[in-house]
Image (cartoon, rainbow, N blue to C red):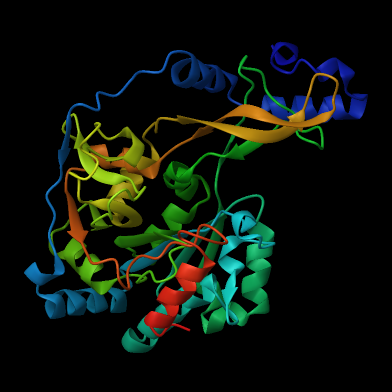
Length: 381
């Protein structure tokens, strides 16, 4: 089976063959074949004609002071943790290193978020545990960056790093690929892998041991994110939700996913997948900010999350062991596929100002320039 899935195997040196064989034995080849068949060869289309808007609430409808105090009480009791997705590099920003190390006037994205946790610590006299998901490509560099910067005056023992999981990239014939070092090519398995990664890394059990009941999750590249936003966390606690999401009203033509009901199941639909002519009908733009209760994280960690296909130009070896960069099959999980098993899920829609400013590109839309402008407008730099 191995030679059928790795056609270059016989061309490798003996020591390289032994290493590849060892890597191959660690793979779940049945799952790989199943994913290839179900996601690439015979995908099941989703009926995008049956999409409806989800209900949402706004800050004006809430008792902000009460919810704020509810969150601080939960923090003081050690019930709130923060989960940061930070597995990416700053490649599109032409920045060498993890994206979280990108800096504005000497203030890195990591520092901007750490400052907020420090402020909560000073207010409730308790450290809020911080769980940071990295990846193979930036794990050690991220840890070193925190160490070099004295963990931004947070307790080092209260910051917990764990790695994102991976899945093999494949050729369009379903064969495994080899990277430039002649190892089996694997890639991060998408943000939806965060739930199983929490469990398999031991972080989920550690959360339970710490007494954490509510976990706030966000991405590293939203430069104005309100970490552990007391309004959102308080709403989550007050209603005993499994999932509570934050959304914004998208601008016309804005390419952000929409929190929707698809065939009566909660999900996020990409802008390009919305029914033609109805793109502006759906008003809950997903900005990657959610709160989960610990029971939901336990439940979804054992759920078989579906993979989605991404065609990517990846560097790998051709049949003659020469390095090429060509289109290959990359498989990713999306965290929002877990929403459909949530029994209680609320959405809070907020104004984007001071809430959402993604750093994606060096210039143009969602760029260094727009992020700097928004950081300055909010007095953060």
